[in-house]
Length: 126
Image 1 (cartoon, rainbow, N blue to C red):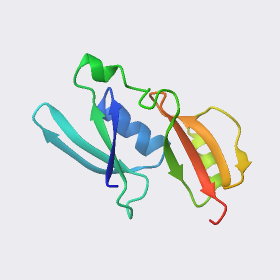
Image 2 (cartoon, rainbow, N blue to C red):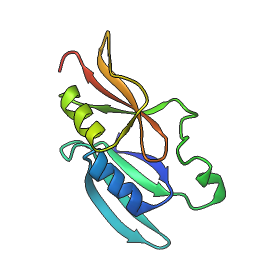
Image 3 (cartoon, rainbow, N blue to C red):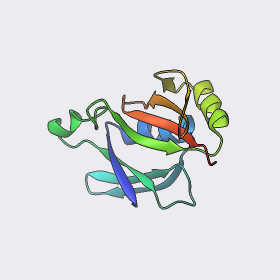
């Protein structure tokens, strides 16, 4: 998978959140007629990118922060759970619960700037 689109209300606020709070890298920010092509990634060596798509009408605005009906929408994998959890917590990321150990590894749910729910997780094999 190359891109996953996430509906946002403002490009610059979204870029700042994903780069400053979550440590993503801004890959591209290209102006287009009436919009921008804005791509961030958690890992520049990966082909998995997050496309920040600004809502362009009222219907799309209704999905900001609720792209998956309140369920966890995206899964952010790490090779050092506690390093990333502590860094994100220090930067003010909103965690919905305490970290827990599951059969597959460590996990915690957090919400992004819009309220979309994410899992930060580390597989046991890492």
